[in-house]
Length: 414
Image 1 (cartoon, helix red, strand yellow):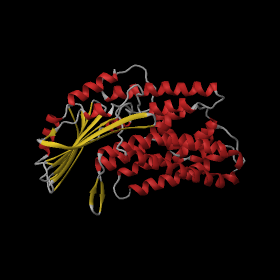
Image 2: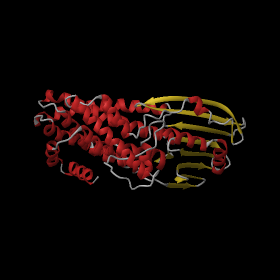
Image 3: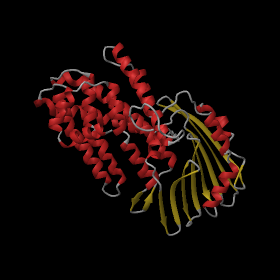
Image 4: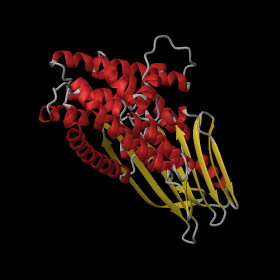
């Protein structure tokens, strides 16, 4: 980790002297991803999730916060697609090299993209700051363009006089790629997809000193998966004249998001069975369920509405993350616990009985939300009108088979 920090500082503070060092280093695709890209690329999605769904964003209309489901969906999808975008962008940089007098080299192209992106990835942490956060993020993105401009002549051997044109064309392609990524992420979030829960950062692990079932143990297990996937990419590259197969890259991305492709999301009929006929004394008035896939991972969702026809309504939603079990753990690893209070309401994020819990209550309209992460896999949320947050807790505890969900998660994990 100290090596990563030193490299990030050097490329940000002394890029003109650092680029020659980077270009001369022996490197592999797996090494770049495992030791640099998967770590820094996670900063932006995590910061955005914490800002939008946990801390909230202040506006002139008041505090704004998107639901945990949409926030977690953005987290996992934007991170996974972001990792792929780096790879695709490097292919474009490599393909354009001869056009601007450079030399094609897939590893050098990935270096150019990854290290130039450092400023944008670090700047994305500005999203945690109210008011000026977007300025910091924008400054980081602009500085990344400058870093790419400095790096292309060194890594791709392009003549310095052609660096401006090379950079401009690459950035235009990068913008197009980002539009595609945001479009896919938006479409996925619109279908109600959720991120998973699993582990966290690219390090090499030997023996574990963490208690079984702890966040540290999960991080170590994730790192082992990353190491194995990285070796698979290296082997694929050796067998294909330096170009790893799409399957090997896909396995690396899958490991990065903490994916367990051996665990499928529950079929919708099975997930629907966890929606009771009554909730908090209210009869069920509607029900829906769907199963989707993105980046090779399945997720499913089931929701039901409950009401008495006299203005009192509740909604229950259960999301199964299936095999995508990585990005939520990165947020949990940050151990973010927060509490906000205002006249007539509050919002809290904390851990209870080993579960991540989010609750929000607004007495001005007697409306609340309660979300639990169950079995490191299922997200269960009840929301609607009630006398207080305690009533929502009671409805969830008595109406939903939480123990059954945990048992299902444990059984399939084995």
